[in-house]
Length: 303
Image (tube, rainbow, N blue to C red):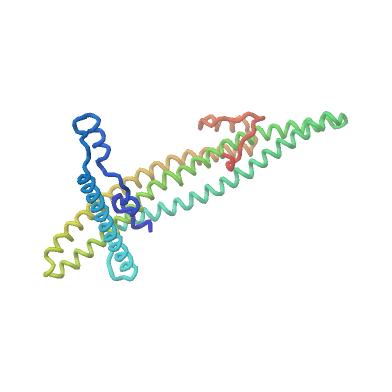
């Protein structure tokens, strides 16, 4: 379960803990290179001692991870059954829920904008083909040459403006994608770590409260107090980090959406009002490369 992950790498995965890579391996290698005198043959006894130490370390890490996972699972189950209390930061949790709701709504906008861009791409392709067909018939039908040429020119102008609008639509969808799936998701990843730390903190807090009511567990109480303090500090640190990240995210989201919504409005309005100058000026304003009339603009599916 994702919720049981913490930022402590020793407890995130059993596979990570079983990696046979000592933490000081790189330092040891660099020391050997700089000091040839250190390069003494390794005896079988030394190898055995190193192997025993590695195995003991892995076993200890696995033991700690198992205990922590058990405590977190127990805490989560007891919370759902109403047998244990949980730490609640009402203001922060309301902001987190609002952020998740915002991401869902923005993802819906992204889905619709992609659909519009894809459909409009096929419209532009059809207009281009229709213009070519009119132009070909103008050469082969002298009696209707003027009418065919007039319609061919119209479709070519529509194609040119359509490719310009596609540039704006693709820029819009790309920016919303980055905001939803990278910027917001990065903050939500920190939120998930914070929520996992909250469960750990409450699990060790519950243990401490239980032991505090048993006067015959003096030794266990001291260990529980130390574990509680470690997880409390970790939880408080992540809570502060999440609060700061969400504040900066909100400021960035407003700036990005203000720019993108202005681009979308101006580009769409200029296109459907037939104002080619305003349409090109909009793309120049946002530093979007304008495609030439004869270029083939890829749909968002091909990018």
